[in-house]
View 1 (cartoon, helix red, strand yellow):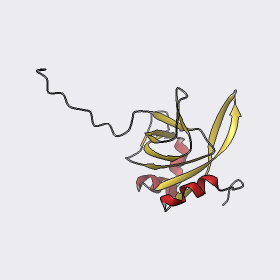
View 2 (view 1 turned 180 degrees about the horizontal axis):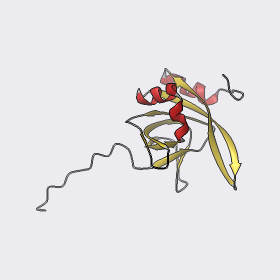
View 3 (view 1 turned 45 degrees about the vertical axis):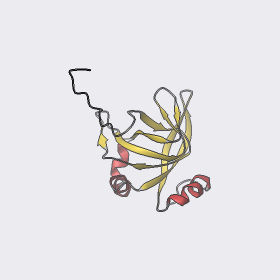
Length: 131
């Protein structure tokens, strides 16, 4: 028996930093976001659909992690309100190749009111900026 009183850490996500790795993803914030020193928005999320990657290249299609979003999303008040309110957000990305790497850039998003609609969102075809 140890003389120390060990307690489990209350970690709210799995400690994995994620980036979007598919043309469509669905997630919701599960805790407060913060801005990193390098200007990213770091938000603990629950993954509903799509592919996310950690910085070692491992793919995730379920679970939790901390999504790094570009700081410019902070200018979109509706997007930030959806994060703050823990709403389910579907994101459409533009796939680009840069320096031999495939990257996904945020293009559009939609608030998904009903979790039953996630599959429809993932399969829907849209052409560029719908605004």
